[in-house]
Length: 131
Image (cartoon, rainbow, N blue to C red; front, side, top):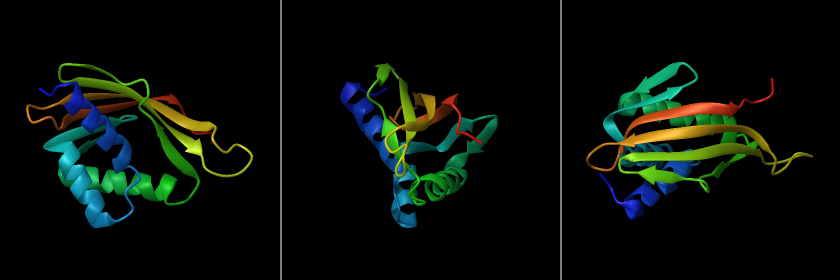
């Protein structure tokens, strides 16, 4: 289990990983954040293990952040209890008339392993992207 300082590090890393542009740096950030057999569940899909998580984060980065359409925001409401971290994240419009407005949001539940890395990650969409 981690302490509150450790949990803040996890929160900061979780928010940052989705915006890492360099593929090698992104893979390193994923390895530091998720355990070797970490799992992320998103909208009925699961990503298991480091390789799948690296691909998942890269795909999300390319689609949402690298495109310049959105910026990642959130974490202000993070709460922790032992090895559980809960926070809300969102994609805010990065340009146009809706700049700064939230386009998508999810409630994130993280279960940490004994080393303080994410063992299980559940992203539960609260506000889906408009079609």
